Length: 289
Ligand code: FAD
Picture: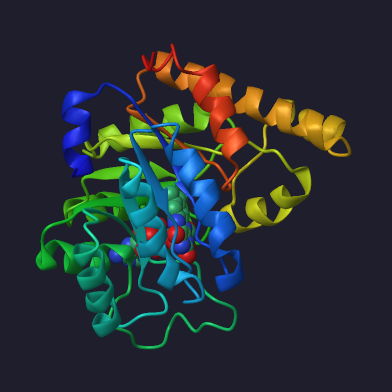
């Protein structure tokens, strides 16, 4: 099913993100985790794409596992390590595999990457145009409620986002955030510049305090004091941290749904118990009996 049609029928969606294995030997365990997450019957599941090329071969395979469970897959695709030929090869493969939805991204720069070197694409919007011209896919894009780390101002970032949407983006998925007021402010400003596509809120249930440091430095996401206190209190007690992380994320989502967000997209880190915790906590809130 093409995702652009989902929000014509549904007021709010629940979706999960999974990531592919880094090496062959991890494939079976990742496939099993993804199957379990898909069995919770989210509205769709996204599968990330390794910008360095390392895990990219698995994205389509994991997306097929999602669809075999009867759940629509959204395959991420980045151009940062690929030229036009490789992108066309990926698009052919996704089409053949029956994948109809792509999250079109630039990708994180791999180490030692020279962004100024000449390439087939410059921004994610160039990939959006390429996929749109290729045809047959519903296309999503990334957005950043607190602004993209490389962009000097939120205003400029929003202007670029509007250009990206105008190239043919059907829906947006946000970077994770821990303070809902950041999203509400972003949605207001997005509306003001004429962005009208559904914006799905990216929510990360933090279950491991240590992994947060790297994620936060990459994403530029800020931590509200309330959440910092939770990390400080429970970082040495993994079970308590996991429980607190799920409850915090669920509370964020209840507030988001109450305020009319079109979808919550949960970064599950391939943990079926975390996805199940969220799905159970929100079943009535999301109208999923
Ligand atoms: P772009 O939209 O190209 O934006 C990148 C920067 O360029 C921004 O600062 C923007 O303001 C600026 N810009 C855009 N247009 C212009 C212009 N015309 N002139 C000047 N500046 C401009 N990474 C992966 O490697 N694999 C994944 O699977 C993956 N999944 C993600 C999923 C989500 C929901 C999100 C939010 C991010 C994901 N990322 C992933 C990370 C993403 O690749 C990085 O955040 C990357 O730095 C930017 O990607 P983008 O698609 O937003 O790029």
